[in-house]
Amino acid sequence: MNERLGSLLKRYGELDLLAQDPDLTKDTKKYREVMKEYSQLGEINTANEVLRGLSKQFDETKALVQNEKDPEMKELAKEEAKELEIRIKEAEDKLKFLLVPRDPLDEKDIIMEIRAGTGGEEAALFVTALFRMYSRFAETKNWKFEIMNSNETELGGFKEIVFSVSGKNVYENLRYESGVHRVQRVPATEASGRIHTSAVTVAVLPEADETEIDIRPDDLRIDVMRAGGPGGQCVNTTDSAVRITHLPSGLTVHCQDEKSQIKNKAKAMRILRARIYEMEEAKAASERAEVRKNQVGSGDRSERIRTYNFPQNRLTDHRINLTLYKLDLVMQGDVEELFDALKLSAREELLRATAS
Image (tube, rainbow, N blue to C red; front, side, top):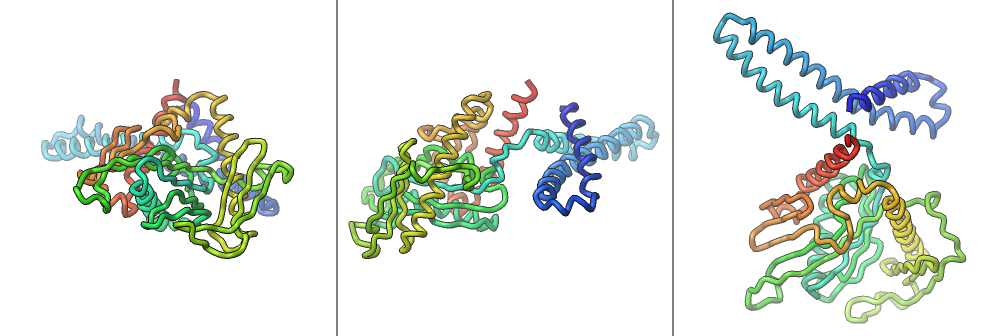
């Protein structure tokens, strides 16, 4: 860790000098890159300065404990030393956290897909509940939220809903939501009060721009059709719905939420690009060390990652053995504690991997 810290602090010093060069602003792209790295390394520099300051205080306080003759002052110094030990441990943990190499995908915007699994209408209703949970959390972060495509049921659920989320560090916060979410509750349509178990699948795709994923027009088959709604009802009477098939991979995307065929096609291309990008990233990740897979489970979508037990107001994340008894608040978007625990677990795993 010390070797990596020294290397990063040296780089921070170089960037500090570079940031003062007036010629840097003439190259907009380079200026953005330098200032971004400078800001990230600045966090590490600040955390290191805090740790050094606390360590110096601790050494001075320990010396006071050893040399102080007044019993009352000696006791006060002992209490201060205990508090400083706690603060030093927290500062060390923060610095270790910052020293873990960041995944370049963490800052990306995402496309999230939520689909009803086993459980029929109850699963579809839980898709709506999860969508509401994520959208409310996004509001607290001032993230931009846009529905890309949806397939609504007659009771107000969704067979599937696809939406984009954009803002600061979106993928870093939501990446661990991929997987099977299991819900246990009494459905509104259940007269006998029996608890049902249903499942919903979530996929989180880092969004790729056109320069990252090159899709040849010859590789696409584009079909247009009329959009449909619940019960076969027509949403509109024009051929505005679009289905795009990527022939090399076999991936198919369907969009019908917009009345404009052009807008539906644009949204479908964004989703397709994100899915292809995810496939390529997954392939690259499998060829590298197994670090990312081991962060918090394999991330496989067939894996049950979390259980929502409504009768007990309990949420359990099975990957990190975390249980929270505030499911009512979680479903209103209060998920910061959960997401922070997942990020911390992932970084600790990466730290162990880089240290070994």
